[in-house]
Length: 213
Image (tube, rainbow, N blue to C red):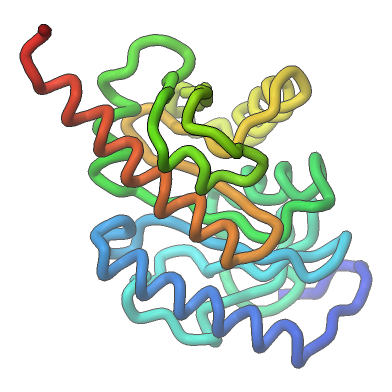
């Protein structure tokens, strides 16, 4: 594959971040959030490039050779096949330059709660664990997680996400019957958000199963 014309990247930094994606991929797989070849993860390298998991790779068996570099138009600049959903990663990096990592997973919690939520957002409120999300300092609040319909038109979906993010501050979004996207300033914060959101979605699913008082 020919390389696109784009800014260079630090090879040592890329290798370090590629290993981080492998390490966190294994954790996501072991927790049942990224079964088989589902999910994709990325880390920003600079304003023009990000490291991204190659398409079709088993997330419990990732190696640095399964990580490629793409530009913000979703084009590969190193060997590897970008995920079909690459533009959903690059949209986030272009929208907010403080975003340093993105995790997209297909956990049972995310898939189920997105499937049964018929509204265009999922409200989560009153839980202490909300304080694990960047910028939240009290349980006495709520977050609204947008829910988008699943589509194969990724460019259109990226545009819809961009439109919503321009109107409200969010920590994540769901794709109906598909999974969740979340992000952070670095991979550690991104994973903290994902871990907290997984628990919060489990709370919501459990609540819906309980009899009404």
